[in-house]
Image (tube, rainbow, N blue to C red; front, side, top):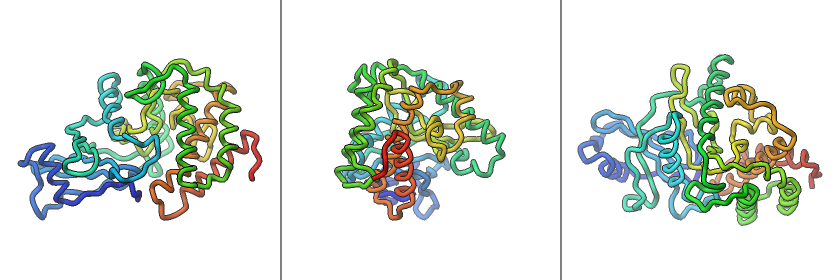
Length: 329
């Protein structure tokens, strides 16, 4: 997936990174077919690199320092490293270990880290080739894994590293407003007046008060961030959007209010979650509105060259605003 946030580096720089992480004896030989870009991601650039001893690793590089990103994406790599450490220490959910991380900006203008390459299939890529039974089994397993991740209790709502607040309404109001300000800053047409969107949030914000226990949430746990092998989850990847919040904001629950995202049945069965209450559904609708706005606005920040995602996501914003009782302008 193409994006101006992808911080591609020269072969010489990549070799210098390998030398720093694994030592000069592991630098690939000149002329060898040793590096390929893993192009499925949307934000960071990732390379699959074969070391001198034929071990395969993944190098993930943050966006260039000069690239303007959305507010919630700032410091994303540090968030991912903290999330990986927490998940490995406090759950049984499979995630890659971190071999080496460098935030010095001496070799390139951004943070980067190395991890082992996981030889498995990306569920988002292969799901259309699976039988319905196999796909449901995987999605059920994702639900169970997501519930285990959500079992981690945080010291308060907000970023993993803080600051924290004991009010989820306060924290999510800030998250929501950050997205709106990002859109206004770049003059992104989301199909609605920004102040009307704010009015919708304010009118429904009381539904957030029912969330009193801060939990670790991935927020970005889509099929495309799940690696599978032999009927099991081999690894979950891309944790840079994690924070302490309401588990109901997780990606697996999105289809409850936005059917265009799929069928949540298997995920919810694996998660062990029953039907939502009406208050929870309104809360989930607010989370969907936030997500749809992100998907519209990020197309400008990432420099998308076609309007496919923008048009689709703007349609989702309109659907949600209409369901909140608003009339199109």
